[in-house]
Image (cartoon, rainbow, N blue to C red; front, side, top):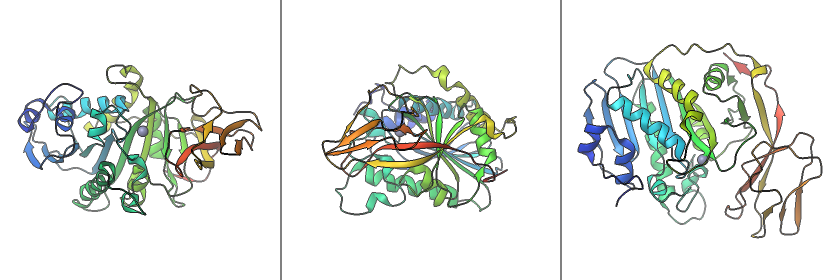
Length: 354
Ligand SMILES: [Zn+2]
């Protein structure tokens, strides 16, 4: 099978070119594990298609997971991660931490689709095997990605710095172009160090979740005890149509983080951020569900009180609180699934730790 990138990259080619994306898209469903050592002494363990654990020769204190392509059509983060990893594998970028690279859904990337059957980012924390379901690529992939993250963290001693950045782009544009979903921490404080790092990546808007979720970032935070984030870095576009300059800050900061260059972060100041919490989650109840605003309405758009946002069978969903804004509206989800979130501004005074 040829990938949409029109190149066949086998294991030998990967060792020479560092083209981990091309390799993963050439063997989208599965590849037997193998490993090798780069000229710079980095041990590269390919655990499967789209899953690689990189360990530098020198001792390290940080274990970072970078994931992209959990949704197959979110191409900009896939291009960003692919280039970054290629630069590490070919000696252009030094690596001073352990790194787990995850290209989430290679078959969906080849198909230029968000998903083949199931939304991968609704399947974590065991949701891949809960309830009545038909087996799918995404369900087995979610289980495999969970195992990979746990194996990555559990194969070194505890107490090291753990982070997982799950990179996405959104279906719509956004009033706040870049934003992060900060998963529910069960009352633990939000991390100022992480907020400062992500601000330097160009992300100053955070949705602070107040309930468990089936997302990869919640799995990272709750089960893997890592600082976990879903990063929404812009709008979905096809391969080759991304303006990568819009991702430059994020690229620069990730490269600094991985190569051990001083991050030189600004001090934490709440005023520099926008924080939101979910006020309501709107699930699709009938096949007649429809959104009552234009397709190009952006995430975080606010509407006047009483505005009808959606109709679902006979029911109307209206704006009930001043300041309520929409996020992630998508009428094209399965029955019972989330079709939209309504959010409202909040503050985090007294709820952070350094
Ligand atoms: Zn996504």
